[in-house]
Image 1 (cartoon, rainbow, N blue to C red):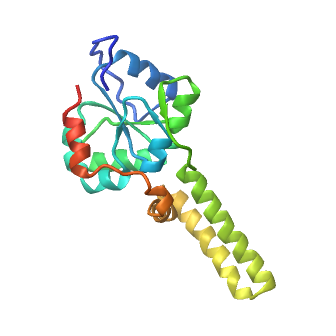
Image 2: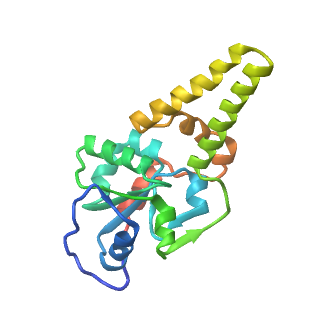
Length: 203
């Protein structure tokens, strides 16, 4: 991310994660910093860090080698909470890119410390959508099992097992499914070529 106030090239620490206040300072003082937002299009449009590049996680995973070659040396990956950014960091590591960092607490944490952000239309964050969907399905399973058929309790158990697996593997199948819903894809997301060209053309 380019800075208009400084041209310092001080070496940045290579820890796996950073806090929002630290990132805010880096954005203001390092012209070789690249912030990559791996959330979906609707989430990015709702709120994102000013100057960040939008590379949705599925796109980054599919073309990790190409993105690893374009991102530069000092890269911070951001999402809504840090979970998807951590997945992106691991995938880039597999592609040979070491040193990428994850913003703890995600974009909301950056906004909370006064970092410059861009706000658009309002939509629910993916984590909130997952909680609503999982909670609704579990409630439906419990109520259905009590009033309709005990077999419906399997639904609640299945959701519980899925959430446990999600936490253990730091993945979210339900989140991936929800990301394809119309309300989450109403905003045009970049193609691999568009995202790569944007990174290549940064100043």
